[in-house]
Length: 308
Image (cartoon, rainbow, N blue to C red; front, side):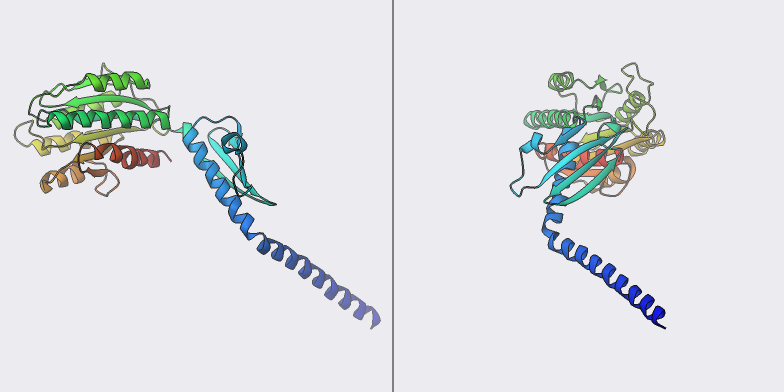
């Protein structure tokens, strides 16, 4: 009887001790909630820094970025081979970690930037157009130096101008600067076909395509302001066929319509040219100045999201 009482008492005492320890940890965790939140936000800041920097040292701490935060939090970035990163945020005794895989340098987008150069664009708008295109190229290659970009400028000619694909920003900017307006016609079909040729290694201006596409996906970014006029007769159908052929080969198509008010044209670009008819592959730009924001924010984000 006495032994039974001792055993039961010992069991109850052990349970009480365990409950007490758990309570202490819970109270400590609750009391350190503020530092826990600071650590999470510090880790998030580290992730954003890593994505922005793109090519960090094997270990970058917040002291190498901005000394220490005013709230005394900090973060540490540790790259996880082959293409991941672990970011540890710390505030007080609280640490929180975020782990990302297959970001940054893992994705090496092959991009063709195809843009209308018809004389239907007035000279002032044309100059703004070129500045927006140059800013997009600058933003893209600075954000991800692994990008290779080619240019296709189109009007009525069945052989649109193609610039050699490159990752050299200065060459891209110089090419954009050198391009002048063409005639009044717009041949989007042949622009898509030529872009597809470059992206899939069947063009003398290539090669641009880098395999496998899981690491170097193919993107076509189209900037257009007016209704395609060529080829005469079944223009939309023939242009859609070109887009379908490109998409069947794995080319992802983004379209930016500049100041387009024609609903038939807009629906055609959304439903028949862009990769999807949702709002993540077709975007409206109010003018050629607004174009730079649409390209840098919406289009580049779309390309980045497709790489994840």
